Length: 245
Image (cartoon, rainbow, N blue to C red):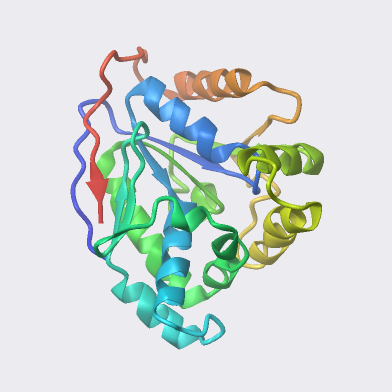
């Protein structure tokens, strides 16, 4: 994976958001980035793309070294435009494929592989550093990837709310057992590599259990405005955004 520059026309402002599966991180952060004209980084998509690639290469995900080698060679391009998210691996557009159940149920094997995780974290830091003005979300953004971010938020929700939301996101096609594997069981596995269920010192908690989607967006933007050194206005066209490798 290689880094490529993404130049923002605004102040340098990093918004880091962590949280469990189904808490609304991706949809909320994408909407907030769009509203503010910031870049957007879905770090979970990077782990998913790595999972897709390793499986496509026929690699045993239990082989830590082989997986790390594959991640180091991962030809990943990820869009940082919140209004047009595209993920490609080599010449393959995997934007939809990485959301498939078979990936959701195996991605923890990449996320808990420490050598592979270190490589992905390094790539995430390059993207964040190059962007300057970005909303980055995942599992350990507030504590490991961007602990010096001006805005650090743990976006959470009750287990019931998270299961319901993930079910709706998948169009009601998954069984209760499958949803449990993809949300609750996956969180339990991933928590062995990062803590995204409790807020670290200096990290604000935003519980969206009883909030609407728009209310959650507004609450996060309010936190951004409070941390900003200059007034934020919602641009009509957005700031400069692009893709990162």
